[in-house]
Structure formats: C-alpha cells, structure tokens
Amino acid sequence: MKAQTTNGSRTRDGRSTREAILAAAQRLIHVHGYNHTVLDDVLRESGVGKGNFYYHFKSKEELGHAILDQLVTSFIERTLEPCFADPAGRPLAQIRCFLDRVLEAQRERHCVGGCPLGNLAAELSDVHEGFRTRLASVFAAWRERLTVALHRARRSGDIGAAARPEALADFLVASLEGAILLTKVSKDIAVMEQCVGEMKHYLAQYEAGR
Image (cartoon, rainbow, N blue to C red; front, side, top):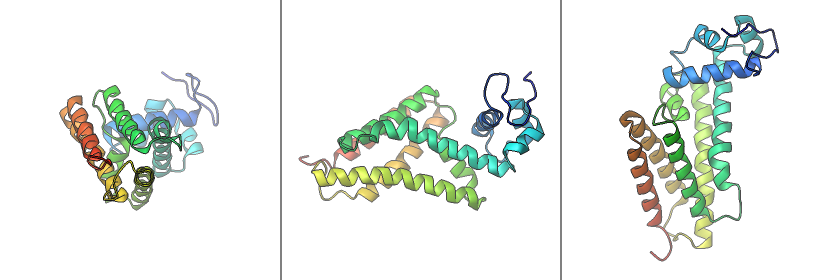
C-alpha cells in the first residue's frame, strides 16, 4: 500500500501528489467514465489522502478539467506535432503520417478504451456545458490543424481546386472518431486499418493529376 503524503510532497514511486492523482483518475475515467468515477476510488487508486486531494483540486470538476488539459497536451505532443512540426513539409504526407499515428496508438492499446477525448465528448457534451465547451475547442483546434494543411496542399497544387479544406478536415476527424469507436467495440485492429486505408483513398481522390 502506498504511503500517505503531505501537501506538496511526493508519493513513494517518486511522482508528485498531483501527478499521482491525475494518473489514477485518468485510468479510472478511461475505463468507467467521468460520472461513474468517484473521489474515494481516485484516492484509493492514487494512495493520496482527501486533504491532499483538496490541496491540489477544489472539486472533481476541476480535476476533470485538469485531466482534459493533460489529454490534449499528450495528443498534441505525441500525435499531432511529430507529423505537422515542419512548416515546409508536404501537407498530404503530414496528414497521412497523422492517420498512421492514430492507427498505431490503437494498435498499442490493443483496441481497448477508444479515444479518451471522444469518450468524454460522448458522455458529457449533453449534460455538462463546461466540459462541452472545452471539448468543442479541442476538436476545433484539431480540425483547424488539418484545414491549414489542406489549404497549403491546395495552394501548392497537391490537391485540386475542387477540394474543400474545411469539409475535408471535418470528414477526417469524424471518420477517425467513428473508426476508433468501431475498433473499440469489435476489438479488431483490422477494422481501424481498413478505415484508415479508406480515408487515405478518399483523400487521394483530390490529388492533382488523378
């Protein structure tokens, strides 16, 4: 059993108390959802006392917002930035890189859990306005990154003038989220592989010269 901690101290495994709370809560929410994760379970999982919890977070809602911020940062650093960091990169290659990284993330998770951001959006968007607005801004930023790349592709002549970057970006985001959901329920990575392949095929229809 983990030792209790004092305000601002570190847990036995070397993480800060705040990090331990976030890690435990994220694991529980990923499996059980936000509404079915209770504070006592987070405290038990993290080995942190209630007083220490309230030293770092005023409420479960504040904890949820911190987890959402953490998920967004992780998504950007691990999935988006490695593909889009080079402003001179070929935009269609960057988008295909992004699709491949999403696929690989599902493969590494063995099709378990789905998309953490998508899960929260499905659970909370109709019942919690604070989470809905935060999640909306996250998906808007994701679409914006793809839209900018597609505008660059059209300006460079990589895709034809008939392509509509905003509509294409919406299609890719919606298709990815749907593919992740199907993969989660089927527990078959071949579903994700097939969906990503079809998205690439769809994107290729707009390439100049085809």
